[in-house]
Length: 63
Image (cartoon, rainbow, N blue to C red; front, side, top):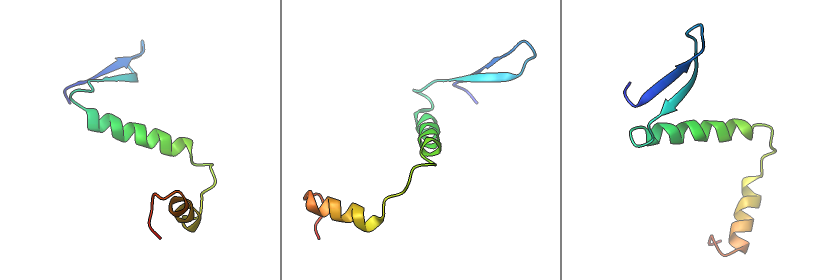
């Protein structure tokens, strides 16, 4: 796959990647989304009705 270079350790094991963002912007956005999602796994969710009520109260959603 062009536009991606791998860094290896002394044993030849891939340890990092350098991604050409001009070529693979969408791939990087997907990777970033996964990282954000994983970092938020332990957060408590907010009920949809509470989110809707807040959006209605702030005028960002019609009720």
